Image 1 (cartoon, rainbow, N blue to C red):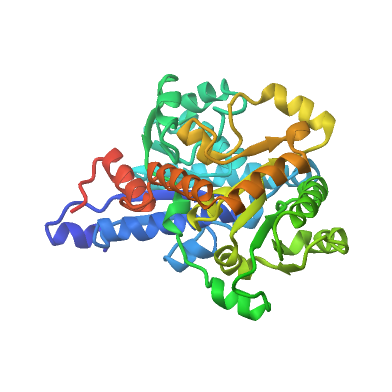
Image 2 (cartoon, rainbow, N blue to C red):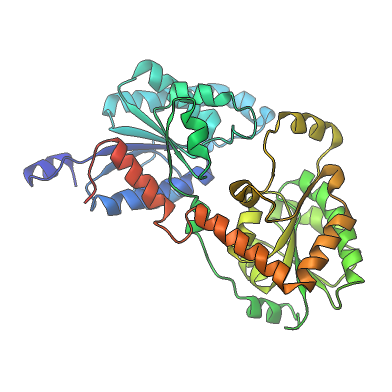
Length: 397
């Protein structure tokens, strides 16, 4: 509904929300926000800005393609700096021209934070809202001061984040983690049937990471741990879930895997999880996905010695797994660098596979953390959208 139509009908004025994303992950969140805003306002909202395919499906006519801003690495970014600077100015110019009630900046801090900085300088009257906080509480916490200087409001995914950012004077609201909004069940029985894995055979999922460096460092230790487990767990079968860009590396490193092995891509991930009794995983988002699938797990992480020496001096959190951070205890066993040995991993995994009560306790602890993240409550996208409407002073009926 247009503003004129809303006025003629005697209804509340139509709120104008500019949403700006800079990469595909933000586009997914932006699409969810658009759908929720439309529902909360009964269609009486005007949304514009920068988005990708998901937001286009919700009616977004993007100012430009997010391919221009979805860049990673110094070599890729350097030649595109003039284009990036031009895109940042275009977003700010359009915000000044259209005067939205709020500009919602999602993810992509290298892009969206520069937009916010220019907005604060050129149009301080326009409210800026950042959706998804950078994890500065884990690395370089002083960056929160910079964030507070360029943003008006922050919507965060984790329950412990508001107190951290509020001490820097930044208005912050916890809305829940979007991962809990994408709960889907896999077909474990169908997976076993497709891959000729008997129903009574224990299945160990192995998730070696999404980066080549992670696969290089983690797959050998997972393989050695599987060799140790083979002696303890009869008929153990391994399922490795990989991604296209590391599939070749995984194939090259698993030619002599000690147990029967099935390698699948992301299309069978949920079915593979449902078929698994437990999992080895490299630290990352996959730990939360496994928790949602109720798969008990052991987490490991290794990197190059020099990189780890630098990284370990910068990091300032007691755990690397999100579930453990939220519950402030080691719900999920995790091992990093020198502590991440095949012996330690195998010992913990044997306990999970041999002791149903230990596996059940871990799953229960994970479910409690997921509930803290918003599982079972109002969907995070709806909570975030309601927060946006609250901030701009629009009452959603």
